Image 1 (cartoon, rainbow, N blue to C red):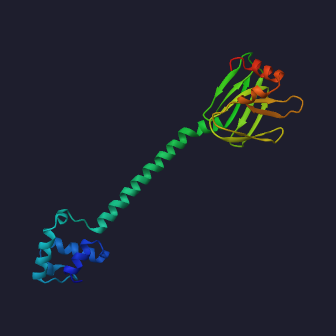
Image 2 (cartoon, rainbow, N blue to C red):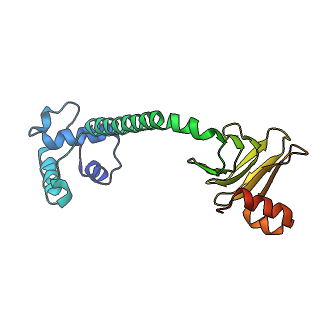
Image 3 (tube, rainbow, N blue to C red):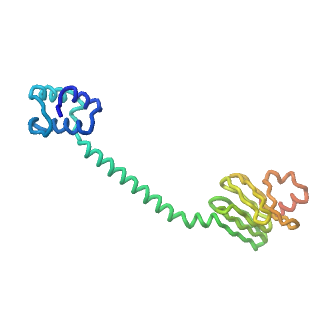
Length: 211
């Protein structure tokens, strides 16, 4: 391969093939151009090109062979990938138990006062003699008694007894109650409490006197 001004300008513009790059960089670091295999450059032309390279500021930076650059990038990428894999592995181990616990909750209150149960995805305030079984993974809920329910994310839950699906919005407070006559789950937001019949509103206020 012949190294001349045209090839060097092509090199400076970053348009050379890998073979051309290797030939030019071997020529630049070799004192005897005739000793480079498959590379022939006249002494006069070589001197002019070498001088032109040294006259350009960017040519003063150390030259790296493409193979070395590629190996460096591969090692860097592999190292970063390994760190990410280790991070997600340990994160999974640390959150596995918490994930299972918060996605399958059974809370029971046999006391006379309400009991608050706080989880990552929701809070539940159980009135006296109430029980709530919530499985976010399966998307179902089973309830007895009365509870205040405050989701921290948007999700849907299906009543196990009636198969009715309820949509819950993050940040809102809901009153959940089991209708003894129909065995159906009743769900309404706290803001809807004022629109209930006086008897029902008084009943829920007695269940949660601190709300």
